[in-house]
Image (tube, helix red, strand yellow):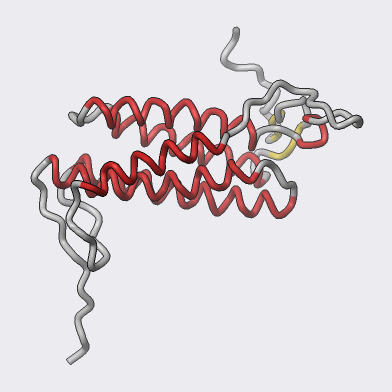
Length: 191
């Protein structure tokens, strides 16, 4: 398989199903941001973290390929007129979302209660989590904008929403594991 095809040289790209759209199309921006998120999660996974978190991140990276496939599919080409699936595109299930929720709950059990927002940082690994969380929120914003134009399975949006929560809690857990300082944001009054 050749890496370069030259079919995108004029600023268009093909969706799953063959439809060509401009490379600046919101659908491309949506799944491109999910791809960026996946790369940041790989960066977190490459740090010295516990094996459970590493395994969960590998599962998340696989699910993000599914999210990308959903977002990269032309909805008109995905379903036949009789309602059957034309393309064999995987979907995000409620079990995928529940897995993130279970991981969040498990990590939260060992964390001190949160009484304030926290400043991102404290350790490079923690900062990578916060960057990934922000990219995840951007992916979610783009996906919701796309959803308003061309709806897809709502579980895809729910997964991105829960994933940003997971990444925040993972940042807090890794702060504790790495004995980094968690700095609370306490607004200062103007004097």
